[in-house]
Image (tube, rainbow, N blue to C red; front, top):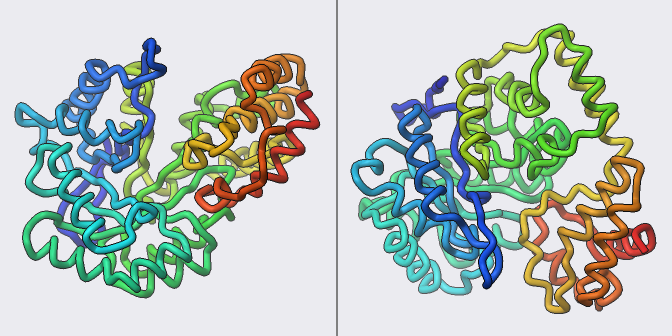
Length: 378
């Protein structure tokens, strides 16, 4: 495992950080739920093999992620990691809300303090709320009380908003979405470098774009990757492109199986900055261009748009729409869509209330894209 200085905070973290938003799940009579025993086993395996950064949040896995992480950190495992969780700003209307949520998080995590406490999914309107409610002052009080050690934020908005937030406070870290398909999306590479010039460590989320860069790779993309003299999996290429940037401190990967976890640990054994050759960077550029020509909707299936008041299965619809486009074969996608129609979860039941667009981290015009998807998949 490779490690990097976490800015000027006086410690190092593993370049690979385990994200706890996509823990392994099993099917139950009540629906899909986290396989808690396997999740705990995986978290402890990661910590036993050099991973020392864990990332969770209040809402992950319907509020169960923090509790599972807390269980995994018993028996001496808390001392092996830097723990990050987040304040869900969309649930905060008063400082009392923030205080109540934080205390609930400590209870679920079974800890007296967290290392990193982040404002979750900052965007322009939420940043305004942070200032109006003086939430940063509240976090400073928590730090003085020893309940949190470092203050940061995760981000989902435009670059200019990112720069405004970065310049407004002496942050200990920030977290942005970045992958080979999102160079200019939200904070993007420019935001990464902007934070870097100010000495703010950057943690990367969605390095595989919600798994899109790891699974069901189009044949022509695989053929393009295969032209490289050194053979690597698409996952390794995606991570390699990220850790090539010296400003990247930690790359979060949400693993759903032990096999994925073990593969990531193997990949990050060689995670060094400035490791890509000009030829490799050119190959990535070719892959980016090829993907750009195929994808219809930049949805990562994060689930922030759910539950829809009309029970529209938004991420599933976009998944079928994108897969039909990427593979140039809509038969299977249409078949899946017919199942949604039968359950009244298809795009036609959308009433265009716009609630989903208010919370979408990707800024997708969901109602417009649902209409296009409905037309393509029927």
